[in-house]
Length: 236
Image (cartoon, rainbow, N blue to C red; front, side, top):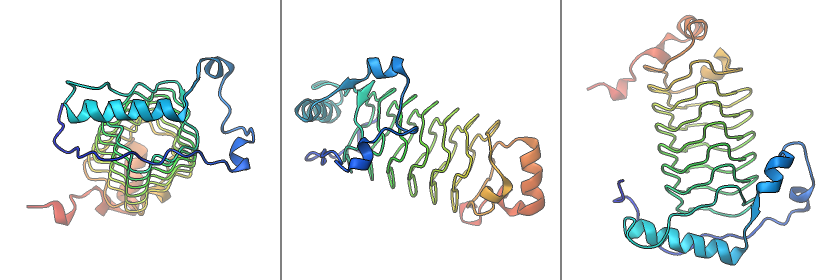
């Protein structure tokens, strides 16, 4: 594992958003009875200790502390701006309306997590695992999703403006009404995606070497063939 990019100080805000609207049951924030039974509640004090141990684990390159295990945890509406959760286990956690702006989520395991209406603007999600996650209506503008696994992810209505999706895996992802203005899809895998239209891709920065279904690729060639060419600023 590479650790050189971590410089860790302090602790992010972890106040819950007590807006009454967040507590009202809606179709979006309801999970199955099976998941509800398994989900665990974590106190603020416990969460701070988990985070402290995780930072110690990162700074010591795994020799001290403990990697954060927050799978199946209720973290709804927490303020985790600039939190460093690289390599943490957040599988199947409830992250509804969580604030993860500028968070470090490198190689974080978010498989099957519930990230609807989350704010991940400018977050670093390099090689993170978001397979089968629910990120409906979330903000990922200016985020780094290089080599991120978004296979079968539900991204409906999310904002990926200016996101870096280089070599990202979006196979089978649902991209209905997803916004991709100036998004970088170099080498991305878009095979088998659902509800992706040529109109959504028209404003993308590039699709150079991206894998596309034949029909969609032909539409790109007909409407904006420059998207498939190597970007000028990438040429040597």
